[in-house]
Image (cartoon, rainbow over the protein chains, first blue to last red):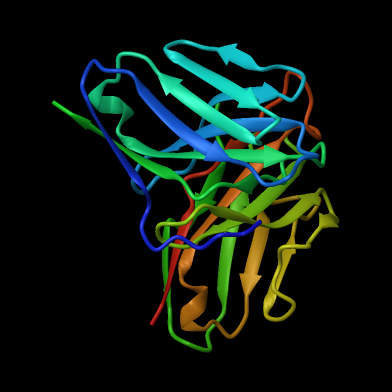
Length: 112
Length: 116
């Protein structure tokens, strides 16, 4: 469902550590999930996606895990770098189009 | 290759004026999506268009908002008689087809509308 956020939750990690960002999605019929990175003043940038017939997918330094039983999605970033600092959104779709339902977002701060 | 181009990047309007936001999709893309983002929130779907057709406008407010994607030219999101609550970032995304295994939607940099 829809949610209104007054402040984005923030995750602070040390440079070089691994980051885990979590997301609870809303629609059990969703069959496609995607993570976006949004830097200040910019549009969302694709990171990684996963379809509902998979539990895990790996990219370069990123891994997405999908748990359909509890409707949970996570993004793992290995060896977090200062350039990873941004707001991260999960999104879901069940329509076969790009009519996404976005989560509320998590702000990732990388500490030097 | 140019990505999704949105203009203007920033738009200031007084209450009661009209706002026109433009989106030029990636070359060859015939599917366009508009989203709105309030500060510190996720993007909210507004409308999905294909060339000359509105496919899904379930996220559009019933009044004052309209969208088009003509055969030639950019997609336009039009907000009439703007109010302060319309202040937000408006993002456009485009894709070549509906969602498929080897396709992706690309987002523009957004138009930040401020109503004063």
